[in-house]
Image 1 (tube, rainbow, N blue to C red):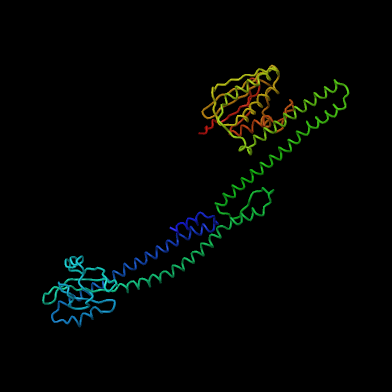
Image 2 (image 1 turned 135 degrees about the vertical axis):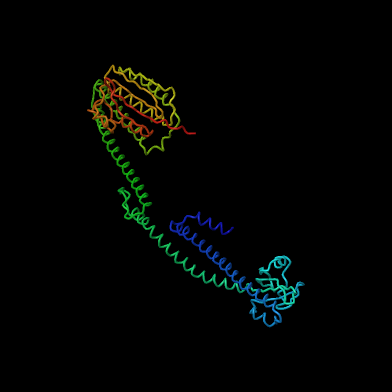
Length: 468
């Protein structure tokens, strides 16, 4: 029990990969060697017993023939046949169990062997104990020349067999021990050679600067390490792309904020110089307009930052009704559309659209789509928000009857801070936010032409499974 606990402790303790490989490679080999030694010892004993039984049977049969010969002096000839020593001797006893010739210690067998011995003319074998020592006995029933039935037994001391077996085991164990030692050395060397690419990878990572995100290059790396290297390179590439995207975002945001803040500063300086109330009010109105644009830009930047893939863990997704969100938002934006002389309508062909998503981000996305349409289409135009579905997706179309967008500019509309021909008073982030939010919900967005003229923003959101 204590050894099992120690083995489990070795497995659960944090060890090096080299130690674990060495343990799992050498432990089975050690078990095989021990099992081989036990098997070899058992086979040796088996064939040794066969040889001993064969010699005992030959001796017992020779004594049987000798006892059936007239005028034979058994006391003189039997020891010669048996070659009696401390390890082998004989006895000849009558039916009453009295020893007539040979060693008196080798008495008649017990009742459990007598029936087997007297029922067969061939020698029978059994093990017995004489003077606290183990013996192998061959017994055969025969009769003297005068027809008197007798029992002939020939015994062999098993201590000699065990001695020979131990010597054979020792002579076998020494080469096995040497083989285990050589195997341990070869396995240790092989593991070290196999783990060399890992050491090379460790060296590359230790000497690499934090700013260096270039791909790793491992020469002659095995297939398993190539997969790890590819995964690391993919991670480094994604990290570099994310850092570059953040750098571009910060640079663009700084550039875009500089203009309204500079204008706001200029307007306040001019307002401070004004002496007439009318001029001061005009300057304050311009300051208010600049401040409003700056607030809108900052809000757009914050929304874009929240919709970045790296912030997914910060904003959870919950069960929500997409149809209710679209109906509520359309109703909220109707007054603004009316103020701009735009006809805003909603066609929900799906009564309930349950999905797993972030309602705050989706609300911001649809607000951007409708507000962009209100800003850029001519007055007295119309906007329709349409919700449909197929087997796997919910489909939202925001359609207007404005001038539309040429095919050459449709891809660039989703770029940050891009404004086509600098029209409108937006900051160029609305469609970028839409694209980030849609991709965050594993959907797609594209721009299509409306008939006879206008633009359709086609958003496809998958029907994700609801959590249990």
